[in-house]
Image (tube, rainbow, N blue to C red; front, side, top):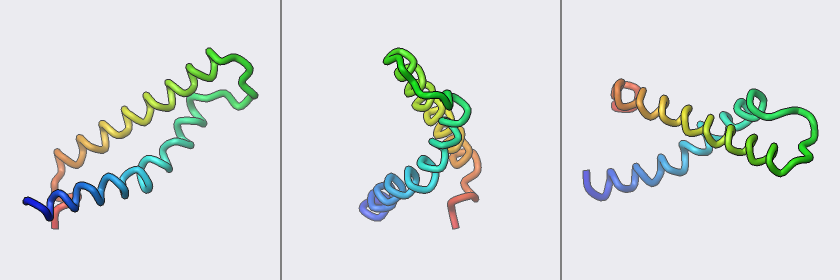
Length: 75
């Protein structure tokens, strides 16, 4: 616990977005965004909302999995 746990939490806050978040954004963009140019600000807002929502749902399930399966990250 203590300072070591705090450092580990900060490290994971850098590593997780890089290795989990970034790869998931193209998946969300492919499934939730149109491939044609967006002309409407409303359409752009809807697409951005879908991508953010998709990220939140994916993060939730990954986070939940780690809490339910500590063997995935504990040594």
